Image (cartoon, rainbow, N blue to C red; front, side, top):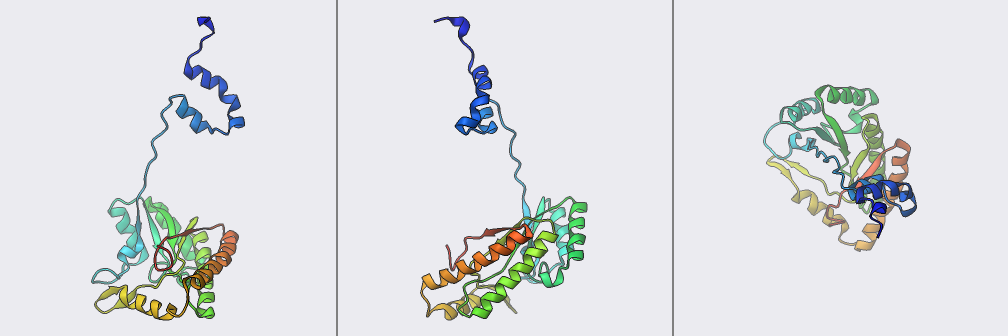
Length: 220
């Protein structure tokens, strides 16, 4: 073998880079194969605003503005806004208010990672399902005005009951089960699918991405 014709592995991969498109390798993959260490991904942690919504503790809810200050004080990188009062109901969030919050977050050095809906596409009553789509469409507008891309959604969300003793899941879940017990899971799934399909059309109009949470009772 002619040793002069030998080239090392790194040099070979560099010379072969021109052919990566043909074999479908990304530049990142080529760098890994060449032994280059990629930059370490930085994980950021955000605070979900429901933490200070007055549901899971004794005491009043914080305003969204005060919650943002708390997030900064506790060292979080950003926040996720719950889509209900007193934090993120679109009825209270005109474009001007969204721009104000966007500026406030930037001044605090916080990202707004996502907005979270509390929707239920599974209700047997058509009018209820239609109301959920209207709610989501308004949340999409709000999400877009905040400069945020992801909007977290449910297929079926029973909700949380605000009882004098504190937040409770059981009351809302019993109501949900009572409303659905006469219907097969396939029917409930079809209603949810229809709601997602229609909502996705509006999401495209607003440049928002719907992020489906795998949460019971419809999905596990």
